[in-house]
Image (cartoon, rainbow, N blue to C red; front, side, top):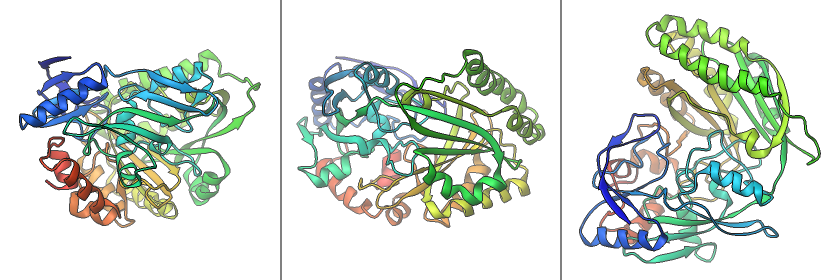
Length: 434
């Protein structure tokens, strides 16, 4: 167990700190460090891979680096129950599960996050019948500020409802038990289309596939859709290696990154570039293991805001966003991502008691996102939009309490578990109250 002072930055580079870092190697060391910090009146923030765009992991005193807690603790192939240390990166977990013949029920398109970081911020994938990643948690080990360890599951419905998407505000998660599925394969069908054709029928697309998502290219009427559905284990229709390198490495990362560096200095060329980029993507279909289909390489850095809106509102949200871009001609080089997820029962989940469509806006990390993201927030506010906790938003506790029905219950539980606010920072003070 070590302690040192190091500079830290999140993945996007928009959040930094220079806190003292603690590097526990075991759950027991986590408990010891938390108990010691609380006794000294210190403030602690746990951090995983730093893939949140908000300052949720920013530390102003002590930073608890959980990357030393990585790996599978136990696995039962028959039941699909797997216990995993909290700091395990999703990419490591996916590989380990595959070797066991198991898989996560759903994933997002980035696998850099740690398991606890992804679930605690409400990370999700897409699929009308599937809730966010935290819905797969059947139990977790929580270290509270007095250093005690509690196993939390359905036997404690209040804490279980709060802690699965807990923002690192109730305690530090050291271990998670997941309900996994037998490993499965998906067929991905990706094709270019017209916004005017897809958007009016997007609810049908959501319901017709296990997973469906759409990308709209700002300044154009072009979209790219991706539908993923189950196939038998013996179906192998791999994507040709040259095609994967061309699409995922060259066009989507190398060329796209170089173009964004140039376009930052020539903003008027951004929207015409989008028209070219949209037409460069052609249809493709392939099968692969589920995690290989879900995850897409992301090497071009960006900042992101994402809101959940009721499923039926997604058409109006997109129409308003399209109209704003056409009116303002804002230089937005990244496509807008549209996904869907089922309702769940986790108190601070965007999906609490509501099936949602998710709309995510991005901007190159060296670009100016302020006007774009502000307009987006105004649009989703008209539809009771709930922000993703790890993605940029400007809402405070009073506004969030109106959007999340159990927000007040969560704050009351936080008052009991961490009355002295050991596990806090400015971001949590804003979204939960001091």
